[in-house]
Image (tube, rainbow, N blue to C red; front, top):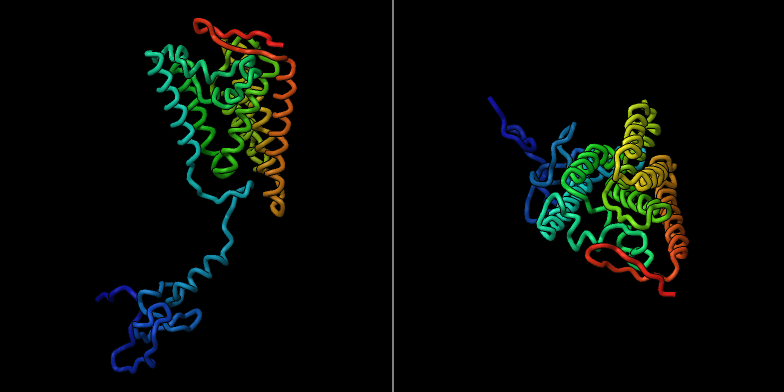
Length: 309
């Protein structure tokens, strides 16, 4: 024998309590009550609890009283990654755009969009500041794209869960700017640079910092970082400066996220990010002044700059 689901009904032969109306549905007469607050409630407004049935108001109050589990950075536990897939999609879309413009997947860097978005220090000094960000969404050929997106997926999933979506996005973008600043400050002014590697290295630094904060064995993370730095040195055509700049800035930003005290977490985390942005802005401004007045343009696809003062 089975009984239908829902709030219990008075046994046969017993007189139900005096009929009252449900506060949420005044047109409904009910003899049922919430076992927590004792108020009358219709079956639609009752929820099964560990003991008896509770009204929807008591259920909502109980949920507010329960402390939500958070990570060391203050993010809600079990939050699914969202920023990482969106970033990967943006990079793929930009790559497809350049490939269509260039009429070639392998030689997509020949597209006009690539020329306008790549990080070329003299052009940045010529007031084309968007390049310090847009260059992080460009890739030279499909292999470059696939390697960076695999790294972004592997590293980003875990770090986004630890930091939370907004903090993760902030660390990613400030790492991208850190890599651009290193190239702008010390890089070869004749060579345009592109790629998400600076931001990806920032995520490597962030993972290492998070592992140390969680008191886990940091050797695997540090080994991965060491191997990638070595590859950045020995593999031709790789921007070591962009990688190191992103790594350092990403590690500092992530440290501000995971080591911020709980009582002042928001203030400390915001302060670290603002401090990094100010420091990077100073780097860009000081380096920009060293270029003097310049006007930059392209001739047959090759970048050129001339002094205007």
